[in-house]
Image (tube, rainbow, N blue to C red; front, top):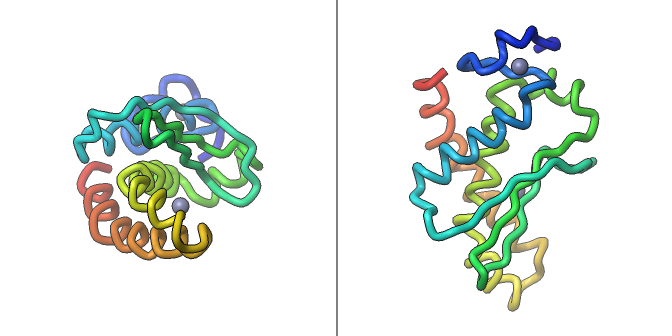
Length: 139
Ligand SMILES: [Zn+2]
Ligand SMILES: [Zn+2]
C-alpha cells in the first residue's frame, strides 16, 4: 500500500494515496448504480475527518447528497484499512443514503445519536452480508 507508480493506479484491487479518492468515488458510484439510486444527485468531497473514514450529508427534499472521504492521517489510515477497507467505507456511506429518509424522520422523534446507532446496526449487517461477498467476487 505504498505510494505506487502511475501504471499501478487503475488496476483492480490497487489503491495508493495518489488514487485513493478516485477509487473511493468509483466504489460509491458502483453501489449507487447497484442500488438504483438514480433519483439522487450525488457529489464527492475530501474532508479532514478525525473520527471517521467517511461522511454522508443529504438534502432530502432536494434529493442532493454529498459523500466525503476523510483525508485525516491519510497514509497511515490507508495502510491500516487497505483497498477493502476503503471500498467498505464507500459502501457504508452509500447505505446512509438509502437510510437517509428514515434517519431524517426518526431524528425528529428520537435522539440523533440513537438513530445513528440503529442505522449502524443495519449497515454493519449489510457490510457483512452484501459488501464482503461482493468484494471477494470482484477483487
Ligand atoms: Zn494508485
Ligand atoms: Zn456511518
